[in-house]
Amino acid sequence: MRMLDAPRSAVLALVLGAGLAGCDSQGPNGTTSLSVMLKDAPGDVQLAVVTISEVNLVGSGGVHVLTQTPVTVDLLTLAASATALVQDVEVPSGTYTALRFKITGACLAVDDGAGGSSIHATPGYDATPCGGVATATLQAPSYDESGLKVTMASNALRLTGAQKVLLVDFDVSQSFGHETGGSGWVMHPVITGGDIQATGSVRVAAQLGDAVTGDLALFSAVLLDAGGGTVATVPLTDPEPDGVFTADFLYLSPGSYTVSLAPPLGVAVTTDPVTPLAVEVASGQELTAALVVTAIN
Image 1: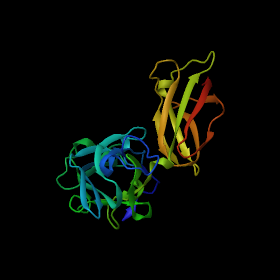
Image 2: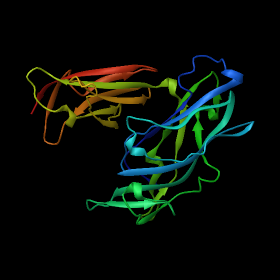
Image 3: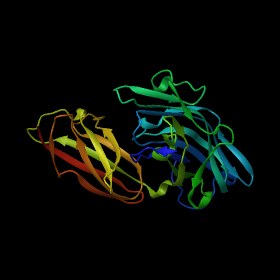
């Protein structure tokens, strides 16, 4: 299978409990409270919708069903937000061998090269969330049967403390691609997991300088990784409203990034400090990059 040419990473944030585990003490009756949230980053296809019908935890004591309530989500809408899959489910504390997702179907909307979309869906899947009736098949193994294993660090998941938080990366660039020797699309999900305690966040806070006029609601904030690849593009909003427009980038792996503002087409912008602005994200750190727009042309 030939995968997507441009790198693309979707992030699933699995929150096991309402907060971070600070020690190895267990919760009531030797249990750990699990919550599962879903997060994603932007990618190359126009729409990527999946239905997760079940989430299971597998260990020596057997299979623990965390949820059997189907959730259908467009992975590309979750760049700066999260959706709950599981909320506060108590499971025995201990070490588990696998976390599994059952995926009952998916659809993709991709650029057809003529300004429109080509819709691909797994057999029998309602492709309406991808824009209409599917015109082609999205091939996929039967992940609705045995389930798709989330590869964990050290091939194990250790639940200690009253609460636990994980971050799961749904690598879109490796999960959707063209069939070798054909024009069809294939879904082969690649999902890895790690401890969310090793992540941080960046908030971009932008405001107009003195005598500068313009509408920052038309701007977006852009986060790039150390290699210059786009991590996410998030529209600026002013929720207060107080003239300070913000955009949040959550669940970031520690490392070097740059932030900048993306103005509307045909508009140039200058800021203080000058962008792209380098930021260094450390484990558990919440950074704010404050930008003053000094000119809009």
